[in-house]
Structures are given as C-alpha cells and as structure tokens.
Length: 281
Length: 293
Image (spheres, rainbow over the protein chains, first blue to last red):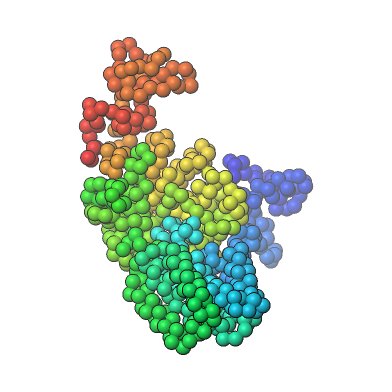
C-alpha cells in the first residue's frame, strides 16, 4: 500500500461509473489493497443510495468472502473424511496436517502393501511370509510418522500453543488406525487362508508398544525397533517351521492381545512423558 | 489490566555436560529487550526457557506470574505467548495463510471468521497481505521469516519471544517490523535476540549481553553505548593500541578499545562498537554498571 489514495473527484466518478476505462482500472487496482478507500467507496455508495431504496453492497463482506475463496485452504480428502466421521472442522484440520496423511506417503505405503498382498496371492508360502512381515508393521510405522518430531517441521511453534499435544497425538493415532487398518484388511482379501487376518492383533499390539515406547524414545525410533524385532522374529520362524501356523496359533494371538493391553496401560500411566512433551518431564 | 512481566531467579540450564546458562537473574517488563551475544552464548536457550519450550535445570522462572513447571499454569502462559523460534519448518505444501491459520487453530481461535480476520491482520502487519495464498516453499528466506513472525503475533500476545526475527529480512521491512514491535511493546514484554546491533539500537530500550551462558551486561542501550565514548577513533592505519580495527568504506580504519593516542579523530560510538568493546575488552573495559556476573 502506498501513501496515494483516490481523491474525492476520482472516487465520485468511480461510484457514478463516469470514469474512463483506464481511470476505473487504476481505481480498482488501488482498492484491492486499500482498506480506507474501500470504506470511502462504501460510504459514497451508501450516500448515493439514500432515499432511493436501492440495496447497498457491503464491500467489506464481499472483499472478505473473495479473500476467503482465494486464501483459505481447501480441506483435503482425508480432512473431509474426518469431518464426515463427526470430528469438528478445526480438529479435522489439525489431524490432517500430519505428514502421515500426505498423498505421497500414503501412496508409498499402499504400494508396499499391494506388493506384499500380491506376493502372498501368487507367491505361495514365501509370499504369505512377506505379507505377514509387512502388514502388522504398517499401522505402527504410519502412527509413528503422524506425530514424530522429525516428521513435524513446525513442532516448536506447535508445542508452545495451549492446545494439548497429548490430545493431538491420540487424535492422529486414532485417525491413522481408522485409515490403515481397513486398508490393510482390504489388501488382505487377496491373501489366501487365515493369514489374511493373522496380522491384525500383532498390528494392534505394535501400535500400543510404539505409543508406550514413545514415552522414552522418539516415536519413529520406537516403530523402527518394533518393526526390526518383528522382521527378525518372522525370519526366524520362517527358517525354522517354514509355515505361518505359529503366528496363527490362539496362544500367540492371545500374547499379542496381552502385549497391546500392557503397552496401552503403560502409555496411560506415562502419557505426560510423551517424547514431544519431554522438555517438561 | 495487570502489567505483563517475567522473572528469572538463579536460572541455569545444562545439556548433558554442557552448561548453556548459569545463574541468570532477570526481571522483564513491557518494552523491547534485546539479547546480544556470540554464537553459543545461550541466547536461544534463554528464549526457549521464556517460551516454555524448555524447562530450566535449576532456578525459578515466572511468566506473567505463572509457573511454567505446573501444567495448568503453563497452558495459561501459552495462551498469552507468541514465540518465533530461530528455525521454523513449514509443513509441505502449505501457503502462508494456511500455516498461520493452522497455528491460530492451535491457539484456540475456533471461530473461522474471527480466525481468518486475525490471520489477515498479522499477515498484513508483516507485509505479506498480498502473499497469503503463496506457497511457503516458493517464498524467499526473508518472506518465510516474516511468516514465522506472523504466527507469533497472533492475538497480540502479552509476551512475545523472538529469536532472530529480522534475519534475511530486507531493510524496508525491518523498519516496518520495528514499528510493529514498538507498538506491541507498549503493553507487552517483547524479548528478541539478534546479531543486528542496529536493530537493538533502533528498537530496544534495554539490552542484555550474554556470554558463555552468563549475563555480561544488563541495562539501557544508551548506557552501554556511552561506555564506549572516547574509545572509538578513525585513523589511516590500524592502531596497535586498539583492541579491534577494521577498514571502513572510506578507506580509513575504525579503531575500537585500547588507549587512543593524542590527536586522533574520535567518533561517536555505535552500539556495535560498545558491544565489541564489551566482548573483547580487557578487565579495565568491563562496564562499571549493569554487570550481572
């Protein structure tokens, strides 16, 4: 904005539309960035309409709506889904901002899952092992990426706002699970036999372990450690028995359920020591 | 309305074996306080402490009379706090408007119309009103710096903590930002760290010089500058008697500190001269007043 403003004559010609094309364009250009002159135009139009019964345009409101249309970011598909699921608009925005919900990241995860599922469908025993290796660790990796400081470049300004980080972490975790679990289930439909669902309890257990471990170390490190341990265990199992029955046994599945319950209990007890809140331990 | 204030008593902070701050005692009231010091002096650590992003290892911090170690009181502080960190990362794909709007949401601006108006107000304050829809990745370094300043200005906070707010910002915008901060400082505590002594000279009534985690000087800018009076002179050659000398644009040498010979051309000291004198001075150059350690 400069120190120059529309003079009274120019403003009158603009309101009465008696100005030249060039002068009108110049006035329009100035009005785009000058609030005081817009107010003068509003006042002049109001005065001109006095007693005539003509409706007066609220230029300020029109201007705000125009700027909203240009500047206010459109909600992403995921944000709209969250709103549709009943999350208030502002919280849907806060959740959807996480890197874990970016299209490229999600596409990468989907590609890995698709590959594992197809390998299981057409690759016989080795393919099934591959699916069983990948499927349970996908949710915990995506959960970790949804609130890991390394993945969140704006963490420091976020941290010193009154919004509770713990709530944000939990909201993002729930949103990730709501997205990841059905996706893996969908890919699992092409996997033969009970293996298609054998990953479910390990996945829930690993997410809980990552949450609990995030009260000591960063979420991404937790997820990488959990994933590495799982991959090593699967490799050992595959090398020994050559079949995934060990994972499918009821006793093993109950173990994962117990792991999930214990980890979640630890998380609840230590929730204020989340890695993001660590400075205030 | 209660007067905004911050107090620190014997505050220290260590990172492992490294001591970043030690024995800091400060009382801050509305106005602009500048923080000067070399790299690694503890400026960012002190600002993070004031911004509730970091707890002290020892001592007591009170911001607006509230204790940041108590969760409920910490939230109370954060409701009245604006903080611009030294480095701000921006989520991928965000525009300036979207980023400031996101932080406004976290700052409990839940009504969209009021929030959008506030976002526009702060973008306007930092001279970015026409660039709200521009992606931050496509912005220059100075423009990004102003986006991060805009989010700190949301809600005209009672406490504003700024870590190098003018780095990369062009001279015209720096003048505009000084006016914005001076206006806010009528009622708010504004603390800023910078390496630009001219910003401190132009904006701050008080300056704190940190060195190796300790407060080396705490007092009025004019007093610090005054301590360099008679210790800055111009000569055709670097003067061996000076603590520091450098060649100026006119080809003459500016000599600071030490003992000037008779007949040299003394010049008005700048804050930078005084700061260099304080930093590089021998014990006889230690300021008589305002030294906290």
